[in-house]
Image 1 (cartoon, helix red, strand yellow):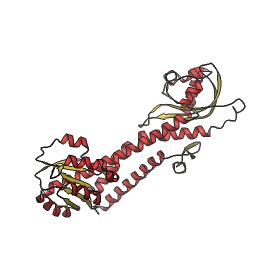
Image 2: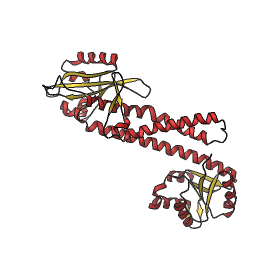
Image 3: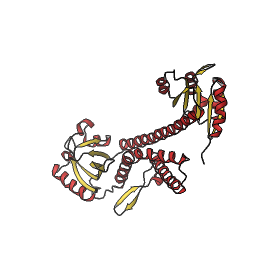
Image 4: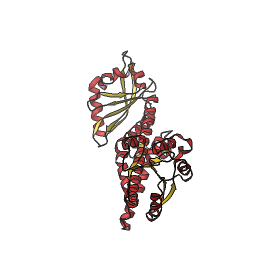
Length: 355
């Protein structure tokens, strides 16, 4: 069943209000009407409508002034995202300015009620999709910020390389380990820091291609001061959103002489899992999820689709898309990373246990 939406309509011309009062009810909308800006703002606060429509020329100001006041007053803070539509006299208003201010639409007078309501429907769907897209990008940015905080605060060295073994990124812990700055490290071949040089790098690369991941690999590196440092490596293949291999993720930890043969790299493995999962979310999930969810919800609202089997399948699509969105939001709220075994020899992030 179609959900009733509340429309605030602010217009001093009573002829339009009278026509739309009947038309709103006929098309499933609930109309709230006002003839001036002051009363309209009060109704806006009391009713918290789904859409606000206002004539640009009001008795006590312009539609632009009305909208600016809405943005400035603290009482409207909880529902700032509702779409506003400006009514213009034969379209003789600077629409580009209104859109730049934040209006969701502009509609010229005179108009027929049915045409206006069809426009309302279009604006409502477009605005909802826009808000969902904004929400998804906020989730992505939160996950990205979380990932960056984890990487930069890690006591373990984190390095990424391209397919040729050239270092493309390193964190602060890597700079401290190698006694060099970011600019001096990035762009160099990773094998230059290994005691056995590029020959060992080729050996590691062969292991990585065969297994997909290298764990508990103990070796010796040399920093800028030619100091030899025992480390334990965890290395994973990195892929882009299309599944193409683009390089490697290397996490290493310095280990003392007595502990060299006993070091347990579980902490590094957990961190590697977090990095891999977050990258996968950013590249492979959220971008296609926005149009999938938006279009499925749009189709469900259409009264033209009456086949119950099709509607049932659309509900399945929406529900599963929402589950995926929930997972991305949980990822951004992780406090204590926990991993679990997924397949033999393979671990994955336990998102529920980590939040």
